[in-house]
Amino acid sequence: MPWVKRSIAVLCLILVAVAAVCFHHYLPRHKVVHITGVEVKRMDADGVINAENPADGPTRDVYFINTVSSDADREVVVYRNEDTGWGFPWYFKFDSADLQAKAQDYSRDPNQLVVIRYYGWRFQIFSMFPNITEIKTTTSRSEPFPIFNTIFFSVLLIVAISIGLVIRRRFRLKRAASVPQSHSSQ
Image (cartoon, rainbow, N blue to C red; front, side):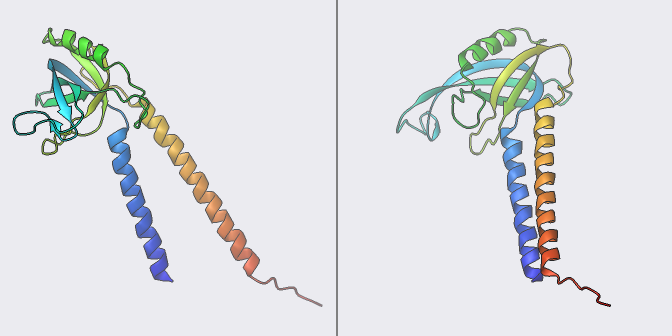
């Protein structure tokens, strides 16, 4: 039976790793940046439409926001600005055109710092861009405390501990019921 326990432990570790990757991708993150420019590109399911990738299906316009980080390394990152609508992930974002107009306005002042809230990853090889969900001006170079993520993981931890305690209690009750009681008779 030790292989069963090991198999369950490995399966649990794999599930935790998959959940961690999904949470890192879909939960909101913040970054303080300077917006350097904006653009709109025509895309289809294969990515940006250009000479090497002609349109071969339905197309859509996707907004992009070019940024430079506010810290010493001046990291350049391009974000997409696309509505999530009613679908997953449930950010219910319907204002990508308004965010694009804000970003264009902020890009005119090279000293203007903004805090962007986004989700997703940037993979150049797959032409994947993180999606901006909010833009706010700021005067501070420090990123805001992730309140939503803290509450989310606190609730998740409480639920996981509660489930673990319930399972442990059930096993103890089951084990206690299977052990015969010895009575001493005099």
